[in-house]
Amino acid sequence: MHSGTLVWSIVLDDPKAQWYHVFTAPGEPDNIFTIRDNKQHLERRRQVNEFYTTGAINKIAYRVDDVSRLFLDRLAQMSAAGNPPFDMCQMMRFYAYDALANLTFGQAFGFMENNSDVHGLMETLAAFLRYAQIVGGFVEWHPLIIRLLQALTPGGNKGLLHLKSIGEKAMERMDTDLGPSTSEKAGLDISHQKPHSFVSVMQERHLRDPSTFSRDDVVYHILPNVAAGADTTSSSLNAAVYYLWRNPRVLARLRNELDEWAAATDTRAAGRGISLTQAQGLPYLQAVLKETMRIFPGVGNNIMRVVPEGGLTIADRFFPAGTVVGMNVYVAHANQDVFGPDAKEFRPERWLGDQETVTQMDQYFLF
Image (tube, rainbow, N blue to C red):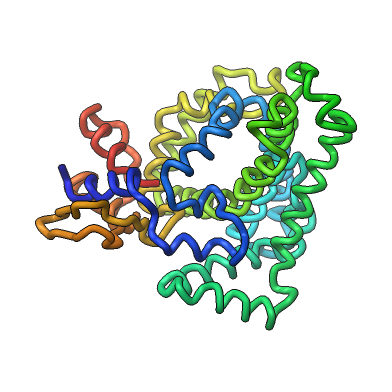
């Protein structure tokens, strides 16, 4: 087994390192990202797997379409003749956050509409990620440092408070729409109602079986949806635009595939753009997305795990049980033994090669 593949198997099978504790405030329960025990993590994932299938996403994907139309309108307005230059990177960030919020809560943050970081949410999350990268190196000091920061900057978490407020308001709207109480609604079939967001489909699950999926479970799963998903999504979108702009040949081929699809599909009759299922059927688009996330992964830090009992030999070196080992995604994705001698180049065609090579790359693909 390739040493990188071996470490990745540890990432999947063994406990997370203590570094993940830095993403949880002292006294607060672990979330889906910070749970270190893989069995507990799997149980939590099983609670919501049904909401992340292609079919389930397609039912609420119109929420992204709504934000996408606004995004295109804003680009047209801002790029009109006579207007000053604008920050495309920032606009892509606004788009990602608004799209994830609309998909999750049924309500966008309003970043694009106001052309600003409303309530400082993005800056709050960015500051938190910077903190985690620094303090994660000596996580045992995290409880003391975070308390000191909270005391010195009492308004520093206003963005996260705003995120929680939006989640609470979304759930209150669902309480109003679905009825006054859980007990009265638990026996009703509400599957005929059009799903509006992740909050609504999770709330429906809660009403069907509150004993196995509580209201706290709904909150537990919806907040990381935006807090963790928006930043990586905006990073990947910006990277895709950058590499397409830097590689006109790739951009031309992608445009050709999309033009051919549009010519053969009556998107106007459907009242929306390309669906998730349709996008998954466009091989070059998928190759561009994969190559973007390979060469510019949204997670730059090491993925760290604890060596299990009995120790482990990696790359001819023995690591005793309890040792923290990890892989850096950037480094792994530049492995020429897996991705070829041109691994540092942006070349989506590598994902359209023979099946054996593509399967090997897929197995090593960490993002």
